[in-house]
Image 1: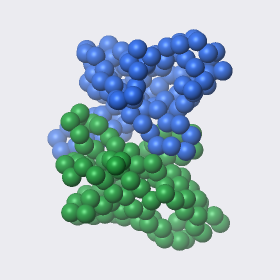
Image 2: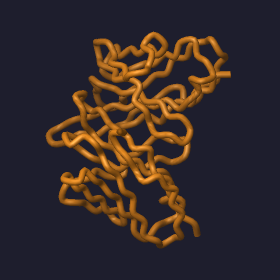
Image 3: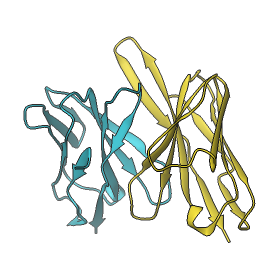
Amino acid sequence: GAVVSQHPSRVICKSGTSVKIECRSLDFQATTMFWYRQFPKQSLMLMATSNEGSKATYEQGVEKDKFLINHASLTLSTLTVTSAHPEDSSFYICSAGESGPGLYEQYFGPGTRLTVT
Amino acid sequence: RKEVEQDPGPFNVPEGATVAFNCTYSNSASQSFFWYRQDCRKEPKLLMSVYSSGNEDGRFTAQLNRASQYISLLIRDSKLSDSATYLCVVLGGSTLGRLYFGRGTQLTVWP
């Protein structure tokens, strides 16, 4: 199947700093990518839909000025957590969909574990 | 009401047992349905898609009842390696590719 990579896999940062997470589709082009967040023992929660060449669509309750999304190419979307605080510590996962005749599959990146101290 | 509701679990079963997970979804216009598996501190991985006619993949059988908006997953002859969290996932909504996740059901298979 298709491959989605994320970088970094793990990051520890101090409160107040910004962190950038990259999501790449390695062997297919993705006009749409999705960013999720998962807290311990909870399910994935969609944060935003990243659209290549246009503004991201944020879910209700997600601050667009805090979680900056840039989808500059068909293979790369970035999520920047600005002025991170301890409550932003979470597992961030991106995904990208590949479609074809009668087929739709979504592939997940391996995730980025963010710890804000 | 949540888009996707799952059995709360956890399920703790011995090797060789048969275990079933259930899931309901609220949006009758939902298009596609999946079961994902998530291991601890890892990303979800697609286990199988769910079709109206029901489908089987080895020890795993998935069923969909559109009238009742109900999805199930049956695991036969459980293995230790089946221990994971199983996520019921529904594709739907106005955004292409928008997935709705259930909270997940944790399964532990013991020797």
